[in-house]
Image (cartoon, helix red, strand yellow):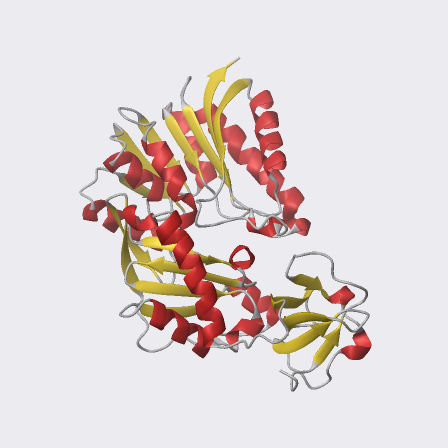
Length: 393
């Protein structure tokens, strides 16, 4: 490790957070020849060892700490130790193998590797990289995961937004599978690994899908932003909803959702449409679902987009409150980390006031337990899911 370049921080690093903003890097210590994403030795302002990290001084997160032990080698064994610890939590403690064959193995900073997401999806292990420096360790990541999950295919991809910001690419291998199948509480889903959103399947909503299925028996349900049918199919197959309609603007997602309905012999009508016009058409036609799910994509990626995101959340939820049947149930979600839980609840309060509705909150939930939250890393807590009964004032 003595051959690694050394980067000095300004002052001491007191926080356990693995991110170091570039403004905290001592400019005079930055190695001139180190490429963005290089592995470096980190010391504080007094020269005391801090650990090892991935340097990218040209973006806001200038350094991502991988370990606080300056003597620890960053190799396949390093990644395997962290993967094994994460797997024990998922399989031995959370016992997710009893639920199905899909779970999140690594949730970035909360599981000890900043910028890394790994999902186990049936016979495929999907790796998403959110940091340029991790792209240098593709071979080590693959080796560690192949040793831990023999027989499964390991697919490595770069998060599109992070790749644009940090300037890197991950080339797919010619033999990478493009699809897989997962089972969750007995419901089967096709997962599009090439063109699907995020890692291909929204594992973070597993527990919310399970809870919703308990509430919908004999009721009509409209699932807006349904993607490949997660909530819709759980409602139809396990929840025994009377009628289920799923709506999404993504043509390819709707095609997968329809195939998923056939897989499960489920009576669900999937419609390709934009959420706002579809909901307005429901009002005009007098269609009032007894259960309404609003699960839009991320509307605020960062602080600069927060105000606009809150506005769109408000518009969507006001329209949804007008559509849902009197005494009906609303599940409304936000996956925008820049929008706090209190922000989102305030949006719902304002939306309810403007539509003269009373919301009785049954549950405020987050992501499933295999998406743990690092207490000192608030960015790992992003999903808000509010279950509420809706009545007119």
